[in-house]
Amino acid sequence: MAFISNNGLENLKKYKYVSGGYSYLDNKINPFWIFISELYPMWLAPNLITFIGFITMIFACLFQVFADMTLTQQIPTWTFYFMAFAIFAYQTLDATDGKQARRTSSSSPLGQLFDHGCDSFIMQFFIIGAAQATQMDRDTLFYLQFFCQIGLWAINQKEYYTGVLHTHLANFGVTELELVAISVQLFSAIFGQSAWHNPILGFNLYQIVTSTILFSAIIADIFLFFSNIFKSQKPLRVFSEWIPLFLFWTLQFVWFSSPIYSQFAGPLLINFGIILSSIVCKTIVCSTTKDQTPLFHFEMLPFIIISLLTYFIKFSLENLKILFWIQFIFTIVLTLLFVKNVINQITTYLEISCFTIKKKQY
Image (cartoon, rainbow, N blue to C red; front, side, top):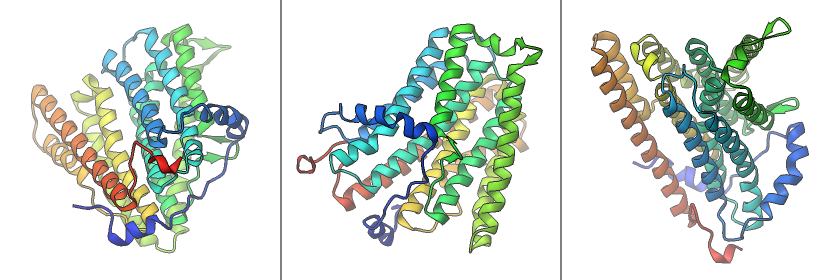
């Protein structure tokens, strides 16, 4: 079933990206990004640049997660170096794909969707990577990813109603956050994961950092929630879009309190991230096509069913593992089908390719 309506496809040709502005470091690093973009061959498709960065980040995260799925143990030092490289590579490729699109005259709404869609999936990898680097306790990690999910959804919902995606606050934005993430990985690679828990001048660096991040995330979420509702011309509609998300976030606590979380914290959090990102991607698509955002998301269905079964029926640990992995696989399949559906619709309608550029364009 097609996700984008006929009117939505027509609106693709009218779409114009509106930047939410740039942070301090965006402007300072931009000459480097321009230099890198001019090294790309003219046949290299912008979406392929984005995808290479995305795949690099996935591998870096999987190396760390499968080194310790419980997210409690020491993991090999090289995984931190690789994660730092992956974040830098993703940042550079993500910042230069648009420049390549303009160089080759291949800019399209698909490029914008592809870029922002990958960004939404990457967030969870950043969080898990930082958690493993600092040996963050799993309770804190759960709440951190929980509040970051709310923020990610709220920011993209705001873009849907305002047409502008704000990715920075004052002079601190995504670029600064990525450089902080790189620094965290390198710090752990050089000094070890346990160094975060050593007192410095009488202060515990880990506690200061995690408390500050959690507090900031909660305040930002509260502000975005009420801002989205009360500043909208359709407050009831805006609130109704939060309802399925409230269900999703509530059911996460079923897994948080189960023995599965202690054994498979990494895969479980990735699972949460995939579901949330697929919902965010729908909002991004609807923001571009001016279609109405859906109030029900099929990607959530396996998660809802298995979560409710887990809550009401006391399964053995082995059966819980089986149910979790079945749900995980179904979620990935449904997400991939949605992505394939949207890409096929857009490329067919605009007569373009996703990962190649027609010669006449450059």
